[in-house]
Image 1 (cartoon, rainbow over the protein chains, first blue to last red):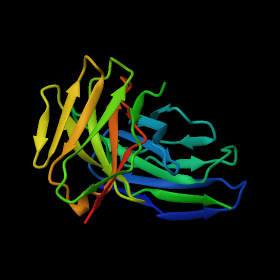
Image 2: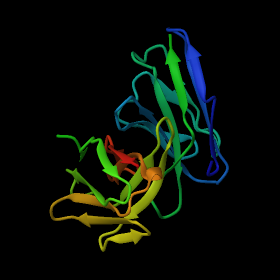
Image 3: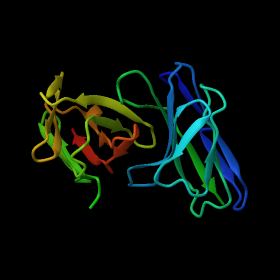
Length: 112
Length: 109
């Protein structure tokens, strides 16, 4: 939807396993973001990237890692160091003069 | 104090009612403000940007009060399809946005 896709929609993993969430956009936007949302909570920023091969930590980066090797792709790895990984993960993009962000459909990660 | 504060609701209103949400923010340097709508278990979607002069889009009106550091969203003639969570959003000067926890609206027949 809106040129940004996330996969898979639902993901189940065992505790202690790393897992990588995919985020792809085809609108040639420079900036991409990862957020996490817990039930009844707002979105919290994990990592963001303004340009290829560069990214910055957000408010809750511990236990996560990202890469930005290509403009269209910004994968997020949830490592075993993340204490409470079960959440709804949202990827977003923005570009141009506006700060508006547009979201992918999200991935629901459940760690068993 | 949270950077962005919203009344979580729920606001239960009948169809056709007018409802207003407020959102207060603490960072006086914020420049960009938005309202997003989020349906249950879906991604947030941009509803409208909020300009200093206020702006209107159909049944929706958004206003910004910099002096008191709040933004508002007014929905007129509520529809059942307006039922959702409304997120107050603003920039924090680092090219990333800060989201409020949302206000839930339930429009009843």
